Amino acid sequence: MFLARSTSINLRSRRATVATPRSVNPSHIKVSSGPSVARPWGAAVETAGSPIFPRNARGLSGVNTTVAAVSSASGTSDPATSSSSSKMEVATIGGGCFWCVEACYNMLKGVQSAISGYAAGHVKDPTYKQVCSGTTGHAEVVQITYDPSVVSYKEILQMFFTIHDPTTKDRQGNDVGTQYRSIILTHNDQQAQIAKEVMQQVASEGWWSAPLVTQVEPLDIFYPAEDYHQDYFVQNPGQGYCRAVVGPKVAKFRSKFASKLKQ
Image (cartoon, rainbow, N blue to C red; front, top):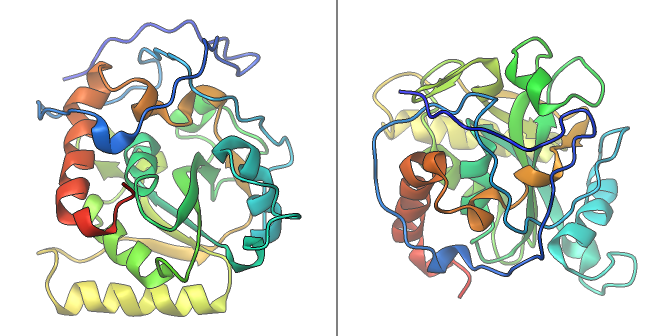
């Protein structure tokens, strides 16, 4: 089943028409389960105040650059002047639709920001339409800036393997395509080792009945997605795909990891 979605987004300029921003806590959003619904690239985008996140035409690579870039979107202080900025680390993961993954991790204690974007492709500064065509090689990913003294990289990955199906190649539910593949993009050798260990744990403890197909590779460049994708579920909880797909995932995450969520 596909949801027909109209859009007023100007794909040429890649900027949505944005109303006055509103502050919504994902943990306060009421969600209900519904049928599995695929999200075609042309689906309706109903922005209702998503904060502007300026795209970087060159993409983002490396922890320091990313932390500086996401600070304006998350409303946090400039890392250059923040006493805690040196403690922040970055994780980049892809588990299907980035609306789902972003919404979950933004609720997590210790997470400064979760930014939707594209990575692991071969086209410079791709648009959403290009990525969804399946011709750029990119995956929909989320880049998470977090405080490792509050939540560890290992915990982030362990949660990752509970909020998406890492056994289905190039798909999540009815969302089908290489852009929806399960992928962990590491920032250093330590992350690569932890990813290997967590995957071994998931496999040996039988978290899933089928073999994992999650890719693990070093991050090259991260391209933040268009403005209207950022905080999409928070801004559009009543949108069809959000109600049927994102909402139930957020509810499950909230229930399973209640003690680790922001208040």
